[in-house]
Length: 468
Image 1: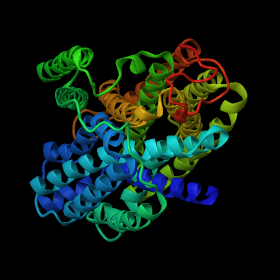
Image 2: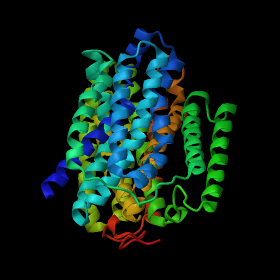
Image 3: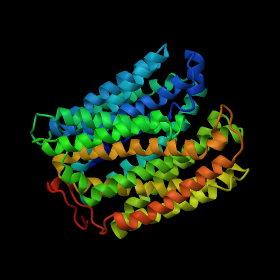
Image 4: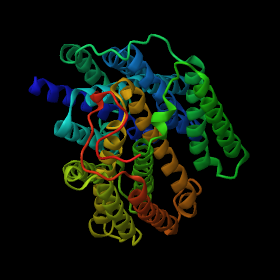
């Protein structure tokens, strides 16, 4: 039984890795896609953002479906959709078909990801649970870095279509193995769903992500950005009203208001924002300022992926000794130091860029572990799916915010079709350093103290050693 549990974790982590890789894997392939399909800048932007928009927008609904109809069933349906959509995207002969395939990939991912995390939180307990969540958390960051590497390798090799085709054999293998290894897990026994709440939270999250992505393109003060963000706020407000009056709400608002859950959402939001913000800055710095090829840039990101993974594993061990508060605060300090080193913009990649990048990435790894553990250790097992959806939603929101903010801060260098100067990059790295330092201070106040990690299967909403 013990061996099969870890095999299940390995399979689920690999599937999640595939989902996260798809957020960044197309970045380096965009020039080739645009050339082959005749797509302009706006259409290429949608090739990237459609996946994140649908993935993040439907995540909470996907988590609730896992609670109601079973995590295993939801997982397999999501994997079927994602695998088929990946094949369709690779075969696409037009921009419309490719963007449609990306939307379908997002739908599959929104079902698959929270269901997989729900299975992990209800399968592992005590120290095994901390280790399992450490592995899961490392995937969130390492997958984003590995996507850049994989995108460079596949685009330079068999062609951009393979950034999508590579998902197909992985998905098929998962569909063969997972039904044999994962027991059928049902939710709380309910078979009804809060349709108005589901529609409102999906629309609100989709509007929010779209507004953040649009801010990076049109600016924070543009009418389209402000209007979209206001519409998102209104939809979230209406969602709260509906949930308060619904007998069987999509999510228990009492769970969402608890301090451990709020701190977990904050940590996930900031960690992902910092990580993808650093990626967004460093990729054009290497390619357009330092003259690296797409493949060479991808290879630079390989040790960054390893640093995130190592940091997450170290963080998982340290949480048991020092608690989430100390780990989160200390990790943000490490990230701030790394980002500060990057502001020097040294000419040599080995001495001027990579040391700071590696240090910042190593610091972000433990924050992912703390975010996941803090949230999922403090909800009842019947709500594990929707809590997983919330955590992963904040992963997507954080990435959108990080890219949008860095696009604005670094505009002096990124404005126009050609990168000009390095002042914008220095300003962007400085902003990351300040954000990490401030977040470390917030973590000291917000993240609950205590060393123990609660077991989700206890059926209560409070973790041992955690405050409210």
